[in-house]
Length: 522
Ligand code: C2O
Ligand code: CU
Image 1 (spheres, rainbow, N blue to C red):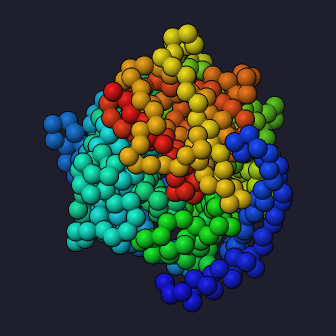
Image 2: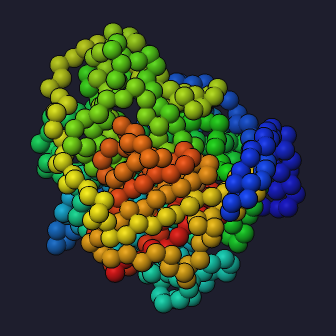
Image 3: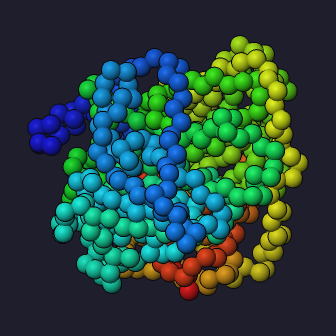
């Protein structure tokens, strides 16, 4: 990309609309004033609810050896039609966006060999997976493009033992091994390349990984056509249909980061579900299971059904990020931060046939206030049910049994402030916390102003929010929690594998600004 083009793009952001607001803020005890600036870009407008909801294809294993399902995935450049009549170049797993869904079973290992046919290094992380460190997608464990033997530029580990990586650099391909020793859940896989996760996920490198097990399948939950994975993302587009993303280096080779005006995260004006803009889906008057995943770089959604069903409580949550809840919990709305999953049942037989129900977003405005439309058909026979008992009750957590209490302060990322954890940016060589495998720890996460907290390996339960009981939607085991100011305390269960893992902000632009830390379990 030439300098002239970059300058032209810069100009375009400038004209796109900049809003500034002065906010008082406390940094390291000193009270100052910072300017929170956000820029926007205007995408070509497309009609809403004009295209049907696509369902990502399910990937077939190439073989099954010794009880392990083996998959091959090529990471490919491709062109797809997202906006009518305008081709969008993407980077996709198998050339599609979202990537193909991997269907796995608890206790049955999966091995995925990823081949990098792109122009830059990649890393694959299974989000929510309890994965050994060398398959976890540590951000420095690069897979270089096929045919590339060296990679110039930023943060490149020098070898298996060099510069902070855990598995070292792979040339052309890497096999990721997932033991799947965890209950049924909606997991997802996405790119995690150091410094460039935001733009690489944005170009399309994200897909579902649905983990199933017998316990769940023995429940009478809606299935088959009535189970809808919903990957919600937001994007900006250029007039020619290409994605607009304000990278400092549009080739994603050397200079990481986004233009300063987007430092608080890139929030697009076009909402995509499973890669289609504001799609519609025809549903029977019956129960549906919606596996909601917010795979947006930075945007959170306050989702609600519009109109609500008579009597309310239309979103019946049955699962959290990493598994079934003990009992269903009904909500009128769900606040879904970047990286989080919510497994919900909606009974469309509560609506008269012919009703159009919009999945709305109360934290959006204008076009981003709408996500998807359900067009409800006639009531049909439905042998599904929402059982009163879903997953096992968690053992009661006694705070006095916590091995230790740690504090992580997520600060900045806005208005030119660096994105920091405990006032530090990520250092690959520095271990920020050391924990004992098998222990449970209390982590106090304090944020200013809003960050989605995520850790690899460990799963947690929310203990409280600002000293008050957790929100009803915080129930269950999680790997990501949206924190809207103040403090959340979580009980983290560190089981699985010894090694070094990351915790980070799942606002991907913040993560790329190194709002990330290392922790080691031994
Ligand atoms: Cu979904 Cu470390 O990320
Ligand atoms: Cu953040």
